[in-house]
Length: 420
Ligand code: LLP
Image (cartoon, rainbow, N blue to C red; front, side, top):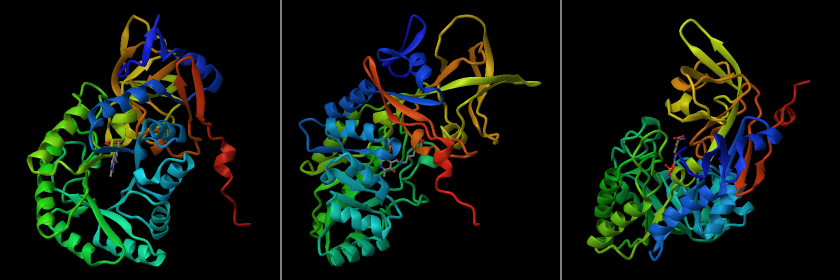
């Protein structure tokens, strides 16, 4: 297993001190199960990196925004990176401190900006000149000063899947490093804005430090240019992006990254800047599994299909990015292995979880755990094929807590009506 809080005891898969089968017996499948201890330990890997430093972690909640998960991170001391008014409502719902919230995203709407200003967030990560004008206008109407950073697009290749790469000039994100200086100058001239920082986020699931450092070097040049023209910033936000192990990837440790970032800043007399991090996946990705049941085995001319009861609507990453997720039977056994295609019931050929995967011979009715399902799985779930979204639970030692009920078909139909 990719996280030691999920492990086999006498060949039975446990999450901390509860067996997966015993939870499924009550709650059925598909079911997301998270480990509270895995969450705490992931947080600790960041805490070790930031303690005694002027550094703030703002959890990128798009990875997993369940209120119980957010509450844990808030309790541990995290702030939040949000990208919508809905995510802001989640922060407020758990009574987290808005002063530790940064707001990213290329398409912030006026109501979202207004709500964020009124809530007193730490900073807007502004992604275009037009957005700058809009925030200034809204702040002026309310009669307050809005704190802003510009999200700079440094044109650095993050060496990750093209769909989750964000720091190249062809990507829609941020303001080009070449025009950011002019944009800061525009911000200086606009009413009701306070320039507080600079921001970048170059992509997700990064497995090397170099792209981070390359972009920070470019940003340092810009900070110095701004300084020379009298624009002082207080923080540098380096975004999220640290990858996790899905298969055999090597991983960056938060401490290694943070040490290198501070060393770079100190070398450039910028050691007094606050550093903000926006990790999502590395805080929650390997803290969760998706449990699914084998519905049917189906042999075609050249394939062994395992049709499970979870589908792309529950976990879309393989369909969208051809991503790899480890799959293990919940009851481990020895014996013959076979190559399987693990697929869901949805009417799309892209509805698969694994192809040509060597697994112990499987049986109808048995449970499988899809690993590394803590990040960008439940938050990307949909109702395609009128399938209710899965339930979620968090295990804490010998107990588990239902943190999201399973959606019923009634839930799905409630908002709809016919025209007569
Ligand atoms: N900050 C910003 C502005 C972001 O856009 C993101 C993620 C993060 C922080 C957190 O990045 P992380 O630490 O999780 O890499 N659905 C894709 C991932 C999309 C990432 C979007 N932005 C996936 O399943 O791989």
